[in-house]
Length: 83
Length: 199
Image 1 (cartoon, each protein chain N blue to C red):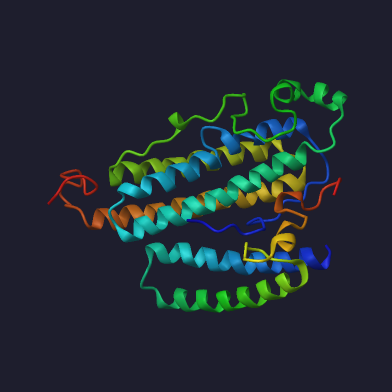
Image 2: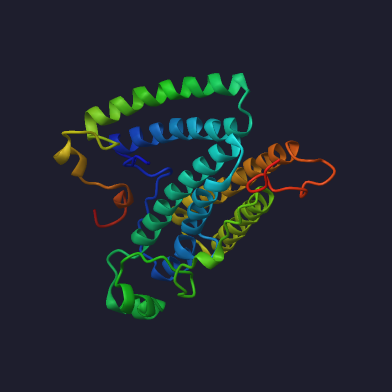
């Protein structure tokens, strides 16, 4: 696993925790403990997203990032034999 | 509206092409219990859903299913890279190849193109939630069957993740059903349809 893949994996697990708590809160909207856990993971996500984007380009489309946004690899092209 | 995130929800890194497996797994792209139908079902049912928690749940689960559609597309794409004509013929992929080359097309394993007839948006809270609970179980069974046919750990790993998500979504829809019935007449949940009837 190279540096990009490792960082992407760490970001994905933090994002997964945020998402799972977010879904849980849809049906348990007053669970404050889950809400504060979500806030913690969100903070972690922000840090990891910043680190990733500084090194490997944008994860979400932003203005004036044409060439950076278009850079390979696209998500479905990771790994495999012919990259 | 939506914003794209340039990453998969869970990584897909498949080393060895396997067109036979691709033809099976494509059913979760465009088959009757696949991810395309799942996202379309939930994102469409939202419009007539009366309760805030359920509008949120359908939006969020429907959005996640779009991410799963992308994962299945990535699996099918990676399983069909660098194929020789001999591999295409020997695996029975030739019947798909003649229509789509190695492009990803929404179809069931047996070749039937995606059909909205495999999903429902009924405009009735209880009916739609039961539809969704059933849909999550049907998708879970499909993933169980796929896992029975897969011997490549690179493929089984993301499929196991997707299977697990069906179980979590089923749980959330069950809680959603409970939230809905709590607001209805406990003596007769069907006395009126809060998506249509006025109190």
